[in-house]
Length: 215
Ligand SMILES: N[C@@H](CCC(=O)N[C@@H](CS)C(=O)NCC(=O)O)C(=O)O
Image (cartoon, rainbow, N blue to C red; front, side, top):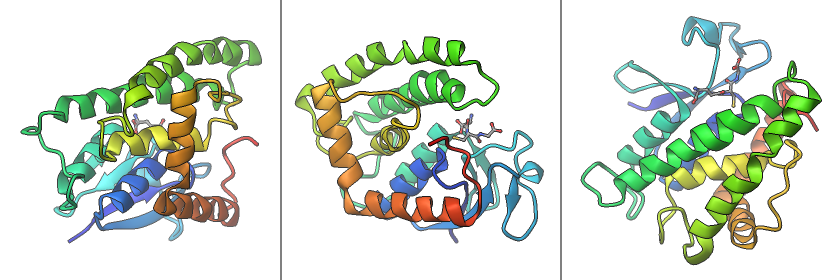
């Protein structure tokens, strides 16, 4: 039995697809248009998750799992790929939870939630963009002597951070002067499985006429 990810192209559920691909975890995909909240069969995401949000996943036993960080943690716990699996017994487990929390609260909700929110004024969006440099600096320092957020191996936290960089230009943010972070993000975006997922999502976003991410 396989988990099913409710996936809206280019949104944070892309991080879950990246983690599953990198960790060799099988995942069924049910595409949802986040603008209309409708799946391709006409049913509604709101009937599964009343907030109408992704990431939303149905586990193999039928249980509902929401919250991108939790979905990513679950995917990492299911991997049998050498170096990818992490569970509470691993010494860097809490570093994994730390960086998932950082991505969720400091980048995703704190910044993207506002700059991609159509109702927010430009003044508010620009104020929120001013929060980015400090956060980029934290990541830049951390990545100065590490290939990945956890050190030597790709983890679900890298999947979440990589998704942020898929949309960083659309958010009118520029991290290119943070050398270590910039090199890291370019390296992540060039990984073959990640590149293929981004290209596939861009095409699907257009085909579904979702297009919720501003140019
Ligand atoms: N708390 C949720 C929220 C994630 C979230 O904001 N998802 C966005 C897409 S990246 C979404 O579903 N937006 C639609 C909406 O809020 O109506 C999580 O951590 O997964």
